[in-house]
Length: 410
Image 1: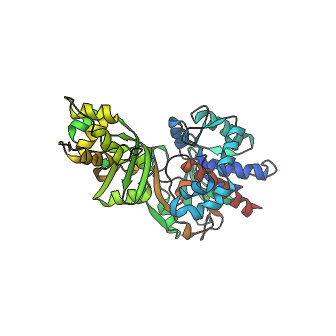
Image 2 (image 1 turned 135 degrees about the vertical axis):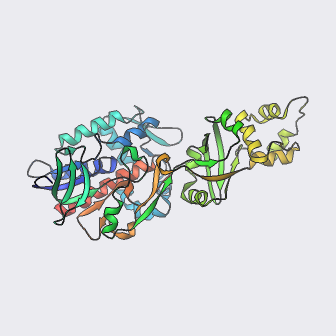
């Protein structure tokens, strides 16, 4: 080990994703670095915000514009724990923050909020420049390895291992999805040794496995299912999905939430697809009573109900090759196509992860055995669907962690 760096940081942030960077900004703006104050961000990868940049490939859905009460309910059983933090850093605050960095935003047709640039890189560049201007010391290729006997942070960096003292530490190490981008949950054993309760990580916002026939898989993988309604158990969701070689993915699948995911993981689950949720079954039946003439069933369904080839063949996958010809039975089949779910995609293919440090084992956001160590972001035990809810909670918990650290350093 290299000689310990006896300079004492006011705040050390471990993790250079959205939660960690927002925590560092919150602290740096309040402390006014320079008059003997110091904040450093340690990130194990060569660059900061890697997962943030990955989110930008889809346009960077920052947050959502729906009313706040409905917004908070998206976090399900963790709504109560997260609500004070979301109230302290709201979607409007996040929009103002992004625009303060020169990135104008807009609200899409679905209510989702995006930067007009539709990518993350301009926002991240401006953000890192702001942090450097505030005096934050950004340290890439610096991996946290726990604490030594004196309570100093052990950091493995380009110059070897160092022990770093900090008055307060913020851990924002991410969950367990996208391990190639840094979220590998390697921190779990370090916190469990200290008595923290960590809920097992499970894939969230992940595709469902369905055993398509080889013909269907080869022909229709990559085809969309537009404006469908999905149900699994008591969970209901509406939106678009995508046929994948392994099954189904997309916003409507992810919106079914954790209970549906857990049912799929348990095995024996059935996903029901309503291909025409805007049309009552009586309307479908009436249209199906129209004379078919010499048309094939596929052509008739395409013209009468505007069903795509993918939708028609999905019906065959669900109900068997021989679809009913009687209008009432066919209408019922279109409104409820059952698909056997055999599992879900693994963590390394999931957009996010469920699980993490349970709020019940924390004092606020601080470790009970180490009151000057505060947690933020996806290493906490919460989950949410896509739609801007993931990033909003990461930013909000980062702000909350930064403010908690400020209380500890005065």
